[in-house]
Image (tube, helix red, strand yellow):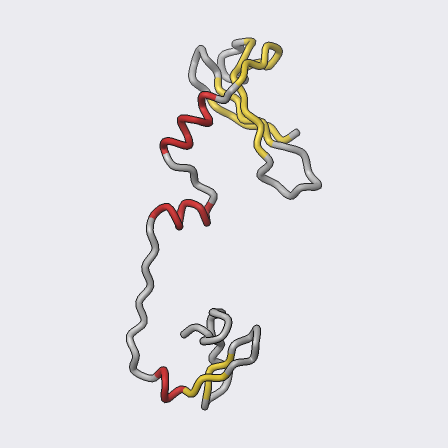
Length: 112
């Protein structure tokens, strides 16, 4: 189901052949008919594609958190929260601050 030349997924827009949308390579339906297609992915590949961090990476990130002395918890009122900054939106927008309250454990985020 993938192009022999460039590896792009073939498009089935014609009745006699499948075509690569990138390099225009063509493959006859007869070559593909009744073939079993399998796909395998490991969990790390899926996590990387979805932007999910592993538990080890999560623990490393937690250790990188810094204290923000003026931030106030919007649940218990504690002043002084741990935070970490991440760029999760497009590059032309501000960063997102992720806060954790050391007193009540409440977590929230704020777009800056």
